[in-house]
Amino acid sequence: MMEFSYAFMDPTGNMTALVETAVPVEDQPRVAAAIMTAEPTCEQVGFVVDAPEGCDTAIRMAGGEFCGNAAMCAASLYALNCGMEEEKALRVSVSGREVEIVVTPAADGYACSVAMPAPKEIITVEKGGLTLPVVLSDGISHAVLLGAVEDSTAETVVRELCDELHAEAMGLMQVDLEESAMKPLVYVPDAKTMFWENSCGSGTAAVGAYLWKTTGGAVSMSLRQKGGTLCIVADEAGNITLQGTARLLRRNTITIA
Image 1 (cartoon, rainbow, N blue to C red):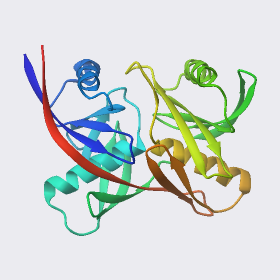
Image 2 (image 1 turned 90 degrees about the horizontal axis):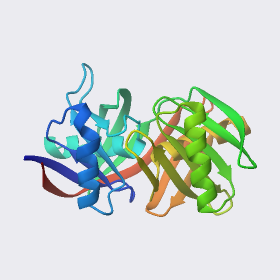
Image 3 (image 1 turned 180 degrees about the vertical axis):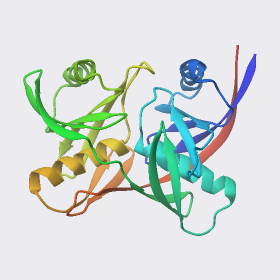
Image 4 (image 1 turned 90 degrees about the vertical axis):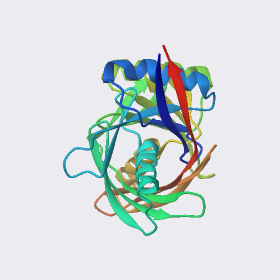
């Protein structure tokens, strides 16, 4: 029997557990599954790992994917552990992808501004009778749907896209631009999870990248999601910044055979 300590965090409703006990990579899916069973509202699990040179802190997601909301959690947890009381720029590694996050103490947590990784490419695919722009990125890619489909159709599409594009993880972001709203679905095959997430940071950034490409100029918008609102800013050059919040709900332990 082994005991694992984790921080249960809320980044705009995308409930995230960050395991602070060292866990070998091969055991991470099993530990993540146990935590998600114990925490029914948990949507994803990351593991605090040794930070590479030049980084303040680092995590690895259970499925090896990149996650914007988890990046904010990692930065906020580090700030909390260090007792940070002033705004500071932190370098955070998430599943091997490094980002800079400006962390600012807020009422019950931290406000975070993440300089998101640039997408590799934006392509268009036909799938399930839909024409979908897909924002290809290292770690996780996202299809953007301006509209809505049945949940079962979305789940089939995102699974098939992930397989065909050989993506580490795949999202399908259903966006209503008139209402400034988004419904995110994320599939992570290595973690064996598919979630209608309360919010998705990397998906929000992908929508910003897509709109920047299609409008040819700067983008600044908020996207209301089930768990709250995330903001995205793309400058004229296409540099993308994700803005959100993260807070620690509680620390807990779990014992696993």
